[in-house]
Length: 346
Image 1 (cartoon, rainbow, N blue to C red):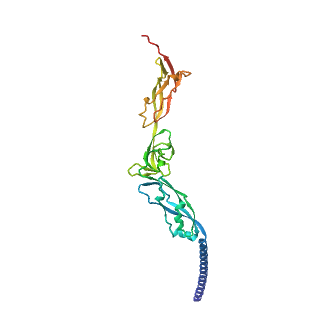
Image 2 (cartoon, rainbow, N blue to C red; image 1 turned 180 degrees about the vertical axis):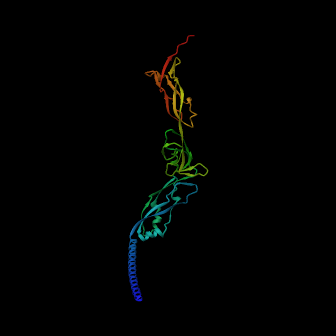
Image 3 (cartoon, rainbow, N blue to C red; image 1 turned 90 degrees about the vertical axis):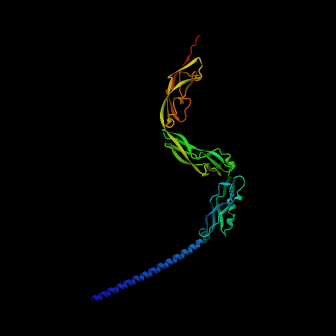
Protein backbone atom coordinates (compact mmCIF):
# COMPACT_ATOMS: atom_id res chain seq x y z
CA UNK A 1 0.00 0.00 0.00
CA UNK A 2 2.81 2.35 0.88
CA UNK A 3 4.49 1.59 -2.39
CA UNK A 4 1.35 2.60 -4.30
CA UNK A 5 1.10 5.86 -2.41
CA UNK A 6 4.76 6.55 -3.06
CA UNK A 7 4.42 5.87 -6.77
CA UNK A 8 1.34 8.13 -7.00
CA UNK A 9 3.16 10.99 -5.23
CA UNK A 10 6.18 10.53 -7.47
CA UNK A 11 4.02 10.69 -10.58
CA UNK A 12 2.28 13.84 -9.31
CA UNK A 13 5.64 15.48 -8.59
CA UNK A 14 6.95 14.60 -12.05
CA UNK A 15 3.82 16.04 -13.64
CA UNK A 16 4.17 19.26 -11.66
CA UNK A 17 7.84 19.56 -12.61
CA UNK A 18 6.94 19.00 -16.25
CA UNK A 19 4.33 21.77 -16.16
CA UNK A 20 6.83 24.19 -14.57
CA UNK A 21 9.44 23.43 -17.19
CA UNK A 22 6.94 24.01 -19.99
CA UNK A 23 5.85 27.34 -18.55
CA UNK A 24 9.48 28.41 -18.08
CA UNK A 25 10.26 27.57 -21.72
CA UNK A 26 7.23 29.45 -22.93
CA UNK A 27 8.09 32.46 -20.74
CA UNK A 28 11.72 32.55 -21.82
CA UNK A 29 10.78 32.25 -25.48
CA UNK A 30 8.30 35.10 -25.22
CA UNK A 31 10.77 37.30 -23.34
CA UNK A 32 13.55 36.65 -25.82
CA UNK A 33 11.20 37.39 -28.69
CA UNK A 34 10.16 40.65 -27.03
CA UNK A 35 13.78 41.57 -26.37
CA UNK A 36 14.74 40.84 -29.97
CA UNK A 37 12.05 43.07 -31.41
CA UNK A 38 12.85 45.78 -28.85
CA UNK A 39 16.49 45.83 -29.90
CA UNK A 40 15.49 45.76 -33.55
CA UNK A 41 13.17 48.74 -33.06
CA UNK A 42 15.83 50.62 -31.11
CA UNK A 43 18.35 49.98 -33.88
CA UNK A 44 15.99 51.34 -36.52
CA UNK A 45 15.33 54.38 -34.32
CA UNK A 46 19.05 55.02 -33.79
CA UNK A 47 19.83 54.68 -37.51
CA UNK A 48 16.98 57.03 -38.32
CA UNK A 49 18.18 59.61 -35.80
CA UNK A 50 21.75 59.37 -37.04
CA UNK A 51 20.52 60.32 -40.48
CA UNK A 52 18.94 63.50 -39.12
CA UNK A 53 20.85 66.80 -39.29
CA UNK A 54 22.34 68.27 -36.12
CA UNK A 55 24.63 71.09 -35.00
CA UNK A 56 27.46 70.45 -32.58
CA UNK A 57 30.35 72.54 -31.25
CA UNK A 58 33.97 71.41 -31.51
CA UNK A 59 37.21 72.92 -30.18
CA UNK A 60 40.21 73.49 -32.45
CA UNK A 61 43.59 73.98 -30.81
CA UNK A 62 45.44 77.18 -31.79
CA UNK A 63 49.22 77.41 -32.23
CA UNK A 64 51.42 80.47 -32.73
CA UNK A 65 54.42 79.43 -34.82
CA UNK A 66 57.63 80.94 -36.19
CA UNK A 67 57.93 83.53 -33.40
CA UNK A 68 61.42 85.14 -33.47
CA UNK A 69 63.58 84.68 -30.39
CA UNK A 70 63.73 88.44 -29.71
CA UNK A 71 59.95 88.81 -29.51
CA UNK A 72 57.97 88.69 -26.29
CA UNK A 73 54.30 87.84 -26.91
CA UNK A 74 52.57 89.60 -24.03
CA UNK A 75 49.04 88.50 -24.98
CA UNK A 76 48.84 85.46 -27.21
CA UNK A 77 45.92 83.83 -29.01
CA UNK A 78 43.37 81.74 -27.10
CA UNK A 79 44.11 78.06 -26.61
CA UNK A 80 41.08 77.03 -28.66
CA UNK A 81 38.74 78.29 -31.37
CA UNK A 82 35.23 76.91 -30.92
CA UNK A 83 33.44 76.03 -34.18
CA UNK A 84 29.85 74.90 -34.75
CA UNK A 85 29.36 72.25 -37.47
CA UNK A 86 26.14 71.09 -39.13
CA UNK A 87 25.82 67.60 -40.65
CA UNK A 88 24.19 64.22 -40.18
CA UNK A 89 24.47 62.68 -36.76
CA UNK A 90 26.66 59.80 -37.94
CA UNK A 91 29.18 62.25 -39.39
CA UNK A 92 29.25 64.35 -36.23
CA UNK A 93 29.80 61.21 -34.16
CA UNK A 94 32.76 60.34 -36.35
CA UNK A 95 34.18 63.83 -35.78
CA UNK A 96 33.67 63.47 -32.05
CA UNK A 97 35.16 60.03 -31.45
CA UNK A 98 37.19 58.95 -34.49
CA UNK A 99 38.49 61.85 -36.52
CA UNK A 100 40.80 64.45 -34.96
CA UNK A 101 40.91 67.95 -36.40
CA UNK A 102 44.27 69.59 -37.15
CA UNK A 103 45.26 72.59 -35.06
CA UNK A 104 44.94 76.12 -36.42
CA UNK A 105 48.41 77.54 -37.03
CA UNK A 106 49.00 81.31 -36.83
CA UNK A 107 52.26 82.28 -38.52
CA UNK A 108 54.33 85.18 -37.28
CA UNK A 109 54.51 86.73 -40.75
CA UNK A 110 50.74 87.25 -40.58
CA UNK A 111 51.08 89.17 -37.29
CA UNK A 112 54.17 91.36 -37.43
CA UNK A 113 53.26 94.91 -38.40
CA UNK A 114 55.63 97.01 -36.29
CA UNK A 115 52.84 98.34 -34.07
CA UNK A 116 52.97 95.71 -31.33
CA UNK A 117 49.33 94.71 -31.86
CA UNK A 118 47.58 92.66 -34.50
CA UNK A 119 43.93 91.70 -34.90
CA UNK A 120 43.19 88.57 -36.91
CA UNK A 121 39.78 87.57 -38.20
CA UNK A 122 38.83 84.07 -37.15
CA UNK A 123 37.00 83.60 -40.44
CA UNK A 124 40.28 83.95 -42.33
CA UNK A 125 42.06 81.51 -40.02
CA UNK A 126 39.39 78.85 -40.60
CA UNK A 127 39.51 78.87 -44.41
CA UNK A 128 41.93 75.94 -44.63
CA UNK A 129 39.97 74.04 -41.98
CA UNK A 130 36.66 74.56 -43.80
CA UNK A 131 38.17 73.15 -47.00
CA UNK A 132 38.81 69.80 -45.26
CA UNK A 133 35.15 69.31 -44.35
CA UNK A 134 33.42 66.93 -46.80
CA UNK A 135 29.92 68.32 -47.07
CA UNK A 136 29.87 69.50 -43.46
CA UNK A 137 28.76 73.09 -43.01
CA UNK A 138 30.66 75.51 -40.78
CA UNK A 139 27.81 77.56 -39.32
CA UNK A 140 29.51 79.44 -36.48
CA UNK A 141 32.68 80.13 -34.56
CA UNK A 142 33.96 82.08 -31.58
CA UNK A 143 35.72 84.35 -30.93
CA UNK A 144 35.07 86.53 -33.96
CA UNK A 145 38.53 88.14 -33.77
CA UNK A 146 41.84 87.29 -32.13
CA UNK A 147 43.99 90.07 -30.66
CA UNK A 148 47.71 89.45 -30.24
CA UNK A 149 50.04 91.87 -28.46
CA UNK A 150 53.80 91.60 -28.61
CA UNK A 151 56.92 93.51 -27.74
CA UNK A 152 60.58 93.29 -28.60
CA UNK A 153 62.90 92.50 -25.71
CA UNK A 154 64.81 95.45 -24.30
CA UNK A 155 62.01 97.96 -24.87
CA UNK A 156 60.20 97.64 -21.55
CA UNK A 157 59.83 100.24 -18.80
CA UNK A 158 60.48 100.07 -15.07
CA UNK A 159 57.49 101.39 -13.12
CA UNK A 160 56.57 101.72 -9.45
CA UNK A 161 53.75 99.48 -8.26
CA UNK A 162 50.80 101.47 -6.92
CA UNK A 163 48.44 100.06 -4.31
CA UNK A 164 44.84 101.23 -4.70
CA UNK A 165 41.88 100.93 -2.37
CA UNK A 166 40.72 101.75 1.15
CA UNK A 167 41.89 100.24 4.42
CA UNK A 168 39.78 100.93 7.52
CA UNK A 169 41.53 99.82 10.72
CA UNK A 170 39.49 98.60 13.64
CA UNK A 171 38.83 100.95 16.54
CA UNK A 172 42.04 101.32 18.50
CA UNK A 173 44.31 100.54 15.54
CA UNK A 174 45.92 102.56 12.78
CA UNK A 175 47.26 101.80 9.31
CA UNK A 176 50.93 102.73 9.35
CA UNK A 177 52.49 101.17 6.27
CA UNK A 178 51.95 99.16 3.08
CA UNK A 179 54.59 96.62 2.13
CA UNK A 180 54.66 95.44 -1.49
CA UNK A 181 56.67 92.34 -2.37
CA UNK A 182 57.77 93.86 -5.70
CA UNK A 183 57.66 97.65 -5.31
CA UNK A 184 59.02 98.08 -8.85
CA UNK A 185 58.44 95.90 -11.90
CA UNK A 186 59.43 95.80 -15.55
CA UNK A 187 56.50 96.42 -17.88
CA UNK A 188 56.48 95.04 -21.43
CA UNK A 189 53.92 95.77 -24.10
CA UNK A 190 53.19 97.89 -27.15
CA UNK A 191 55.33 100.98 -26.95
CA UNK A 192 52.46 103.42 -27.45
CA UNK A 193 50.68 101.86 -24.45
CA UNK A 194 53.51 101.57 -21.93
CA UNK A 195 54.67 105.11 -22.75
CA UNK A 196 51.41 106.42 -21.27
CA UNK A 197 51.62 104.37 -18.05
CA UNK A 198 52.78 106.18 -14.91
CA UNK A 199 52.43 103.26 -12.49
CA UNK A 200 51.90 99.53 -12.51
CA UNK A 201 48.54 99.74 -10.78
CA UNK A 202 46.95 97.03 -8.66
CA UNK A 203 43.24 96.30 -8.67
CA UNK A 204 41.51 98.31 -5.90
CA UNK A 205 40.79 96.44 -2.67
CA UNK A 206 38.55 97.52 0.18
CA UNK A 207 38.99 96.02 3.64
CA UNK A 208 37.63 97.06 7.01
CA UNK A 209 38.07 96.34 10.72
CA UNK A 210 41.73 95.48 10.26
CA UNK A 211 43.57 94.68 13.49
CA UNK A 212 46.65 92.58 12.92
CA UNK A 213 48.94 92.77 9.91
CA UNK A 214 46.98 91.68 6.84
CA UNK A 215 48.71 89.84 3.97
CA UNK A 216 46.89 89.43 0.68
CA UNK A 217 47.55 88.97 -3.02
CA UNK A 218 46.50 91.79 -5.32
CA UNK A 219 46.21 91.39 -9.07
CA UNK A 220 47.52 93.95 -11.51
CA UNK A 221 45.05 96.05 -13.44
CA UNK A 222 44.68 94.24 -16.75
CA UNK A 223 45.93 96.35 -19.64
CA UNK A 224 45.57 94.75 -23.10
CA UNK A 225 48.95 93.56 -24.34
CA UNK A 226 50.87 94.50 -21.18
CA UNK A 227 52.92 92.04 -19.13
CA UNK A 228 54.52 92.62 -15.72
CA UNK A 229 57.89 91.02 -14.97
CA UNK A 230 59.76 90.91 -11.65
CA UNK A 231 63.14 92.63 -11.47
CA UNK A 232 64.77 89.64 -9.79
CA UNK A 233 67.19 87.26 -11.46
CA UNK A 234 64.42 84.81 -12.38
CA UNK A 235 62.44 87.46 -14.34
CA UNK A 236 59.19 85.94 -13.13
CA UNK A 237 56.04 86.95 -15.01
CA UNK A 238 53.65 88.45 -12.47
CA UNK A 239 49.88 88.49 -12.55
CA UNK A 240 49.58 89.32 -8.86
CA UNK A 241 51.87 90.23 -5.98
CA UNK A 242 51.79 90.00 -2.20
CA UNK A 243 50.77 93.13 -0.32
CA UNK A 244 51.06 93.54 3.44
CA UNK A 245 48.89 96.02 5.35
CA UNK A 246 50.82 96.93 8.50
CA UNK A 247 48.76 98.10 11.47
CA UNK A 248 49.66 99.28 14.95
CA UNK A 249 47.75 99.46 18.21
CA UNK A 250 46.92 102.98 19.33
CA UNK A 251 47.75 104.28 22.82
CA UNK A 252 46.59 107.43 24.59
CA UNK A 253 49.17 110.11 25.38
CA UNK A 254 49.03 113.58 26.97
CA UNK A 255 51.52 116.45 26.68
CA UNK A 256 51.52 120.10 27.75
CA UNK A 257 52.31 122.66 25.06
CA UNK A 258 52.87 126.40 25.64
CA UNK A 259 50.83 128.95 23.71
CA UNK A 260 53.08 131.08 21.51
CA UNK A 261 52.26 134.55 20.23
CA UNK A 262 53.13 135.22 16.60
CA UNK A 263 53.51 138.51 14.69
CA UNK A 264 53.21 140.66 17.83
CA UNK A 265 54.71 144.15 17.67
CA UNK A 266 57.65 144.81 19.96
CA UNK A 267 55.46 147.14 22.01
CA UNK A 268 52.90 144.47 22.85
CA UNK A 269 53.00 141.25 24.87
CA UNK A 270 50.56 138.33 24.90
CA UNK A 271 49.40 136.79 28.16
CA UNK A 272 47.18 133.69 28.13
CA UNK A 273 45.31 131.81 30.79
CA UNK A 274 46.44 129.09 30.97
CA UNK A 275 49.90 129.62 29.55
CA UNK A 276 50.03 125.94 28.54
CA UNK A 277 47.32 123.67 27.17
CA UNK A 278 46.99 119.91 27.48
CA UNK A 279 46.98 117.98 24.21
CA UNK A 280 45.46 114.51 24.33
CA UNK A 281 46.08 112.29 21.33
CA UNK A 282 46.38 108.73 20.10
CA UNK A 283 49.55 107.35 18.54
CA UNK A 284 50.78 103.91 17.52
CA UNK A 285 52.91 101.89 19.91
CA UNK A 286 55.73 101.94 17.39
CA UNK A 287 55.89 105.75 17.25
CA UNK A 288 54.79 106.83 20.71
CA UNK A 289 58.35 107.56 21.86
CA UNK A 290 58.97 109.77 18.83
CA UNK A 291 56.03 112.06 19.64
CA UNK A 292 56.42 114.54 22.49
CA UNK A 293 55.47 118.12 23.38
CA UNK A 294 57.86 119.55 20.80
CA UNK A 295 55.89 117.74 18.07
CA UNK A 296 52.96 120.15 18.56
CA UNK A 297 52.80 123.93 18.20
CA UNK A 298 49.96 126.11 19.51
CA UNK A 299 50.13 129.63 18.12
CA UNK A 300 48.05 132.80 18.47
CA UNK A 301 48.48 135.33 15.67
CA UNK A 302 48.30 138.99 16.59
CA UNK A 303 46.21 139.88 13.53
CA UNK A 304 43.68 137.17 14.43
CA UNK A 305 43.36 138.12 18.09
CA UNK A 306 42.75 141.84 17.59
CA UNK A 307 39.79 141.07 15.34
CA UNK A 308 38.05 138.83 17.88
CA UNK A 309 34.97 140.27 19.64
CA UNK A 310 35.96 138.86 23.04
CA UNK A 311 39.05 137.92 24.97
CA UNK A 312 39.11 134.17 24.19
CA UNK A 313 40.36 132.24 21.18
CA UNK A 314 40.21 128.61 20.08
CA UNK A 315 43.49 126.79 20.57
CA UNK A 316 44.35 124.40 17.77
CA UNK A 317 47.63 122.67 16.87
CA UNK A 318 49.34 124.24 13.91
CA UNK A 319 49.83 120.76 12.41
CA UNK A 320 49.38 117.13 13.38
CA UNK A 321 52.45 114.86 13.36
CA UNK A 322 52.29 111.79 11.08
CA UNK A 323 50.71 108.79 12.78
CA UNK A 324 48.82 110.89 15.33
CA UNK A 325 45.03 111.01 15.40
CA UNK A 326 42.11 112.10 17.58
CA UNK A 327 43.89 115.21 18.83
CA UNK A 328 42.00 117.07 21.58
CA UNK A 329 43.04 120.34 23.25
CA UNK A 330 42.14 121.02 26.90
CA UNK A 331 40.96 123.68 27.41
CA UNK A 332 39.90 124.46 23.88
CA UNK A 333 39.03 128.08 24.69
CA UNK A 334 41.95 130.11 26.05
CA UNK A 335 41.66 133.56 27.62
CA UNK A 336 44.15 136.18 26.50
CA UNK A 337 45.24 139.72 27.24
CA UNK A 338 47.37 141.86 24.97
CA UNK A 339 49.45 144.09 27.21
CA UNK A 340 51.02 147.35 26.11
CA UNK A 341 54.67 147.41 27.08
CA UNK A 342 55.67 150.49 29.13
CA UNK A 343 58.38 152.60 27.49
CA UNK A 344 61.65 152.81 29.39
CA UNK A 345 63.31 156.17 29.88
CA UNK A 346 67.04 156.37 29.76
